[in-house]
Length: 52
Length: 210
Image (cartoon, rainbow over all chains, first blue to last red; front, side, top):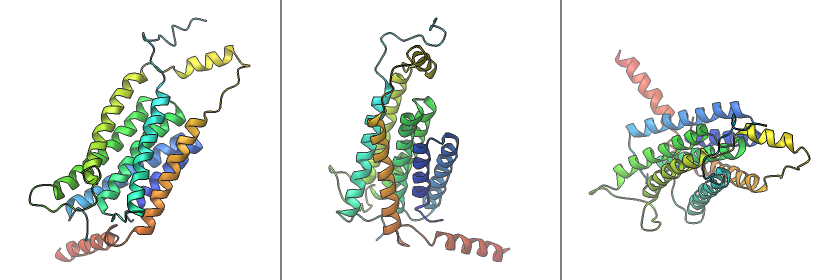
C-alpha cells in the first residue's frame, strides 16, 4: 500500500459521486480518510519533511 | 397548498448556497492546479507530508462536490471540514518539523511562504468559509418544496446545470491528474515505498525478541 493509495481512493470517490452512487461514495470517502490518517500516523512517528 | 408545514423561510431569504459551493470548488480546483503547475513546470520535489496535504485538499473538495451533486446538506459540509482538518494537521506537523528556529526549511516559496504554511492557511480559511456557508445553508429550499413546485408546474422545463457539471468535471480531472502525477513521480524516498518492508522487519524483530 503506497502513498498514492489515498489519491487512488479519492479519485474513485470523486468518480462515484459524479455517477451519483451516494452510499458507495460514502464508504469510499471513509476509506480514503482512514488510509490518509493511517499514513499520517506512520509519518508522524518517523522522519518528516522534505527528503533530499 | 399550505407550505408552512414544509418550509418557513427565514427573513430575508439568502441566495442559494449552490452558487457559493461552486465558487468554493473552483477555488479548490485553482489550488490543485497551482500545485500541479509547481510540480510539473517548476519541478517542486514531492514529500510524504506534501502528498497528505494534497489528499486533505481533495477531501475538502469532495464535501463541496457532494453538495453540488446531491444537494446542500450539513453532512456534506462535515465531509469538507474533516478534509480541511486533515490538511491542517499534516501542514502543522510539517511546519513544526521544518519552520521552527534552528531548523532548515526546504521547498519553493510562494507569496513569501512555503507550501506547508500555505496549506495550514488554506485549512484555516476553509474552516471559516464552511462555517459561513453553514449559516447560508439554513435558508436553502428543502427538496420537498422543490418537488411541490415541480408538481404545480409540470410543463416547466428543468434547466441543465451546466455550471455545476463543468465545475465537478474540472475537479474530477484535476484529482485524476494528481493521481497520475503521483504515480509517475513516486520514488522510494518521496513515497516511502519501503514502509511495508520496514513494518514487516519490525514485526519480525518483535517476534524474534519474544
